[in-house]
Length: 384
Image 1 (cartoon, helix red, strand yellow):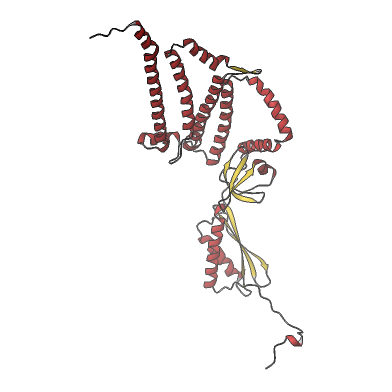
Image 2 (cartoon, rainbow, N blue to C red):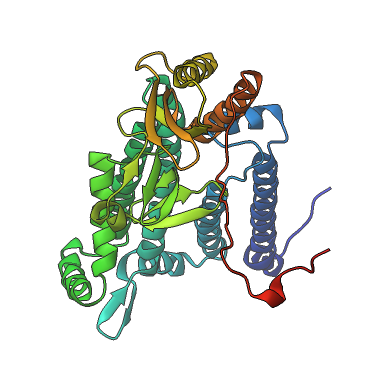
């Protein structure tokens, strides 16, 4: 059985039916690919399957955390995919010259607005190039800080400093590559630098000061992540050192954002700069009539019994003063961790009270005797 197509029908099929069917097929394939891609991204973001969980672990993504880079990856795929779809549809409908003009305008000639020529394709490609490089360098930074340097046995503070510097250097490289890919002349950055210098002179002194201070802190490292410091009335543990400010967590679990310039211009007390060891100093008073030698031996024994008190240097007990109502002693005990000073001091006080009670050593409190020399008659109680 054969069909006899007349020239009119053949022309209709070539001009309408075949291009329509091809257009529908391409659009359906593109939409299906996008739907499948988004579904795959959703399962990868949640780690539904075993291979996805292994991939997330290899990428250094914590359990339960979303992969923020997936959004930019999807945006990049959408940009190139639908650009390809438009190009194919123009060819299917016989618009070859229009397709070539579309690509030429998008990536070469651009659109001239006033005295500025904007090449949309290069501009978008530059942005996508920056996003891809920035995403890749963020992954490298995480692997460097939490994997490679950990295996190398580098201490946490050094890992944090190295990863921070690596992050800023690679960010600048990604930005330069993105600007170059967008078709912008890097020599024009001199104009931008000149404008920034004027802005620095007028209103950006603090920002530049904190930026330079952050670089000095990262290289010189007088303050490191995990150190317990006290500066400008704030005391706590350094949790994160950034290029502009440092995050300090107080004992109340509050976070203080300290500008880096404050850490260089103000005196900083750092418990952990040279050593983690510290010292507990307790003042102890006993009643007059107590044996000072017995008090000294008891205090030394109590300190020696605590597991966090060091043997070297030795614990010292000083007889510091004859107080108004007590004999005043001072116990100075070195400990292995300055961060445990509060708990060790509390333990020693409990032990001192118990030991003194068992040894019948009295711990007095201030007392005063009041002698009334003359009292008005009306204030005296009635005599019985």
